[in-house]
Image (tube, rainbow, N blue to C red; front, side):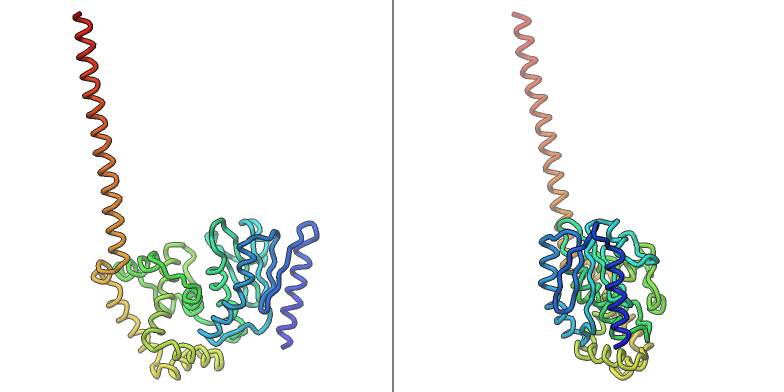
Length: 308
């Protein structure tokens, strides 16, 4: 409990020192969160209203809930996004959200016509995992990121494409490698994120959602990853990893790719675009033909006038 109080005092001091009255932040509170922002807007108001229900949903799926209030800073631009982060934070340029579990702080970048909710849910997972383990265990990065993506509903065709491409080209990253850190280079980071998402999906589909909750409970209770795996799935890590590799071979090869709904929509889109430009080209050629015919008719009349 003392650790919680120290964190709360530090965060209050952080807000007081970093933001003077000249650049004073507005504040909204909910059951689990303190929201800080410079200007009120509809996206921020909407997020503040849906944050607590989203947190209860995360608790239902993982068993984790906030042990203390979480500070959420919402930046209007990149400069503000950087200002709200700790001084030594190393965040990729393409990031739009970041979590600092040791400080119970989430920083979001507000972008035009983009919902804050999915990014918020993603970063919330990092905070809740951080609170659950309190630095006593370095949770595998793939577990942290994969679960965050599941909770945020971040599956998309680009994730499937990244995973499929990695499998077909032999670029799948070793799980041990992405347990400690993700590649900083964006294209390889995409593979790491996709791989994390699909690994958590594999565990939940293979063994069930309830088993996954038990795994998280065992892991957070004993802070021993291999023990939690054995107690939950009655397999050791190497056996689970072997099942994962089999899943990759079956799930991501050319046959599922070319028969998937996403691929069929892609092909349909290509056909539509090709048809559109083909039709446009035919129309352009037809117009050119008409212009030439009109020019020929006009020239004929001009010649007749000259003869007369």
